[in-house]
Amino acid sequence: MSMMVIFKLLGSLALLMFGMKSMSEALQKMAGPQLRHVLGAMTTNRFTGMLTGMLVTASVQSSTATTVMTVSFVNAGLLTLAQAISVIMGANIGTTLTAWIMSAGMSFDITSAVYPAFFMGIILIYLKKYRYIGDFLFGLSFLLLGLGTLRMTGTEMHLGENEALLDFFASFDPTSFTTTLIFLLLGGILTFCVQSSAAVMAITMILCSSGALPIYQGIALVMGENIGTTVTSNLAALSANTQARRAALSHMFFNFFGVFWILFVFRPFIDAVCGLVGYDVEMVKGTVETSVFLANSAKLSFVLAAFHTCFNVANTFILIWFIPQIERLVCWVIKPKKVDEEEDFRLHFITAGFMKTPELSVLEAQKEIQSFSERMQRMFGMVRELLTLSSSATNKKDNKAGDFNKLYTRIEKYEGISDNMELEIAKYLDSVSDAHLSDDTKAKIRAMLREISELESIGDACFNMARTISRKYNGKEDHFIEKQYDHIHQMMELTDQSLTQMNKLLKGRKESFDVNRSFNIEHEINNYRNQLKSQNITDVNNHEYTYAVGTIYMDLINECEKLADYVVNVIEARMGIR
View: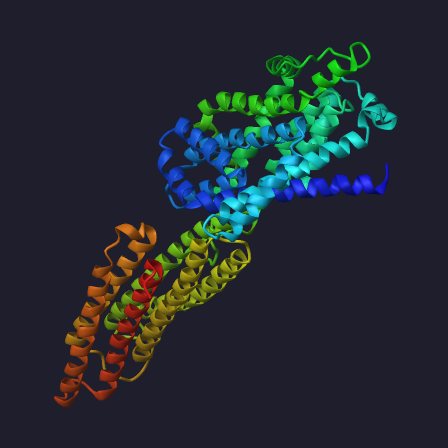
């Protein structure tokens, strides 16, 4: 075998994998946001969940993308783990459409048809408005060109007449159970190494349709691909949160269980699929005319695609009734980490292993920003509690003093967490923005970067207030008078209302959010600050309290007003204002 043929083989596989990736990404850009809403709305029970997973995966040609969306919805509380398992089952069926596209590409010479598609694709890309359709056409054309080249290379290599290859496959007893297990393992290892089940499926189709590889061993390789893909996703989920690991494990259990039961009915099941496609298993080369044998062999790629679909449909039909049991099993195997997540800095939704689909990664980042925002409101709640403790702990030696120091340390820790969250989310968004994204997604990323910057400023404002309260508590200044405490508490109540509105917006859909409510609270805070500023000067002149106490008092009031400004900035970034 010449080096040129080997390079053609590797190059056509690379074309195939690149085409698959480009096609999937273009489809996600076209339909990503709508599919997210469909996935959230349609999973009312296990059957609609399965259908949704099937349709979404068939639409975006990526079961990974569907899994990413599903896991993020579970984390957000929009889906239960049981619903997520049904979606993943459906995704396994949806992903078999790829095998049918490939079998069509293997059976017919479609390379001449891809050139007009390339030409149309480049025109649509330059038209800007339809560039995602152009990207999709380019991806599909690369996929089909890769398949066509692979098919021609397979023919050039004369695999069906290669004695060494034929002897190698003939050395395995076709009726032996051990042979099936060897090829099953080989398929799993190949898929894990190549990181693409599509590429391994293409190689299997070439080997089978050339007559080099018997159909039973070929199907064992396809079963191994199912195992290989789940190992990859489980390794990717190791760095993820508990729910992501459980979803990946349920995917692995689904495929392992399918392979387990199919081994008991291996030959009858394959014979039934062959009968469905019209392939004669008994036909041997030399016993019939060459044209008849070749026509029969041409059906082999369809046999592999049909098996892939029938296997996943049958497996889903069996396991869909046991979803609650699967849920209990994965929850028992993967227990949540026993850490105080409040005090432990860890991103909950962004996971390095799942960033294969840039368009959908934005959803992960949005969930992380929601978590960041809720954490900042909790931090502000601690500042309010610190103020209450400072007013009641008059004796520095009592228990309240210990509580005060403990709470102050906790707020200090939160400030560090807010800095880390801003950096980590920004780094993640930066890596997502390196990919080819739609204009909408680019705008969302710009807005998110502004949101996290303002959220970190909210954390700084909270810490500034805590330091001011601590300085006063540990200093020699007099206590605030009752009127001052009332004013500060009232100002903090208004500030907390503005934080609640911000969290409401980040959790919900911006179309249904009343932005005027937030602006009204901000105006109220500004007016109240101005009123208290004038009142403070009068009170100091009337010797109601010292100038030093008045300064600390106004520092807290001004910091609340600044914090409310940061909240409005987050809201404006989210709403796309300015």
